[in-house]
Image (cartoon, rainbow, N blue to C red; front, side, top):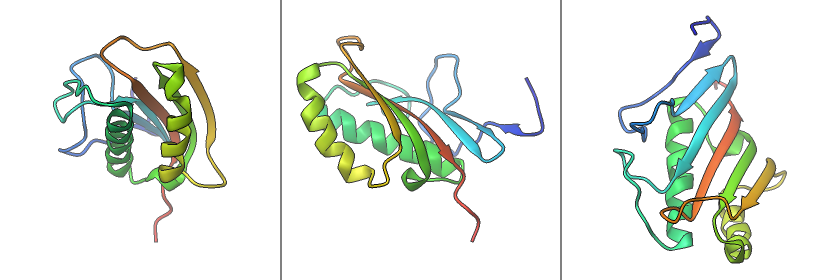
Length: 131
């Protein structure tokens, strides 16, 4: 599909996957970011502690947003996938380091990822206003 309002921003250091999806799709001022997990630049999974995977996932989200002219402060919604329910309290603690009030709208689902991943995040953001 090609529409004048739709673009697929990507920088050389944007984490990409070999799977059939774009890191993000921009529609006007809205940015829809695909699920970001604990992967390296080539899309290879980096297994880690919950905290390590959370931080790597959110840093990957930050890189994708930067390529689209946005940042974490302009995220309006997140969907979070936490493999193990016992990691939810730590998830909430770490989440507050990256997102502050007024918080984005949010959904969190547990018991939903393969054994190779502890965490994944997807987001909807708006473009940061041009100075």
